[in-house]
Length: 299
Image 1 (cartoon, one colour):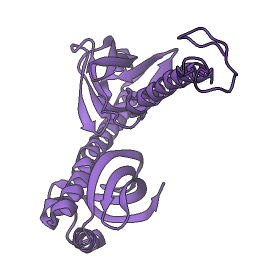
Image 2 (cartoon, one colour):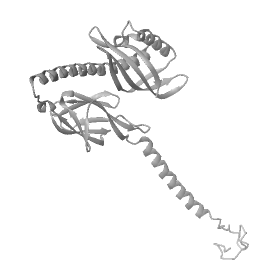
Image 3 (tube, one colour):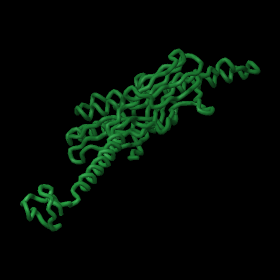
Image 4 (cartoon, helix red, strand yellow):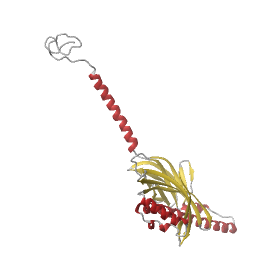
């Protein structure tokens, strides 16, 4: 090993120069190790960046579900003007830190939209025509849904006065049924939101207006709210969606709902839970109320 001070040659394992005593630098590969550590550092930062993007990025729209009558031609959804509205829910794959999906209608002369429950949006039809619904999050467009509103009433004709009367009766009956279903669809999100508030504040009166006091659900819900509140559990309603409805008798319906909650429990911590149940609903004092709940289960 050559001394950098006097130039004398020394043994490879020497620590100091045998002539002048100057410390000798050993070729121990430290420079190569520093280069290797730098490369590893850059790779680690790259991997962390990918993880952060996947964890805190925008939600992805995987599909769109529609609660209401529609048909589809190619990629265009077709709705009937006489149905007045449908409920549209963009099915999203949320990442940690994801925010809610907002929307707007490109041509508000044809239709308008407003938030209904969670990510579910209510599209209300005004006039026939084609437009599109734009989904976005934090100002960034996530996707669009093209649709057309059709006025079928202009093309309906009858061959005789008898068939006209039959159709008129059928239309009146159908309109009455649709009106009842719409009232139930408008009431049930308020019922679930009222249940959420009642549990969080321990106040049954915040939901009692949506329950028949003569039905079994009244006392069951009252006991459930008190028990849940005393255990220190809180709820956040994420989404509620009607999956089926049947008229079992005149003015009485059984509606199946799927509901997603964010539950904060003292014992079990924070978790998301999706539930489904059948709700018997009928009109009392001019408003639809829940009479009883059955077939409850987690999904």
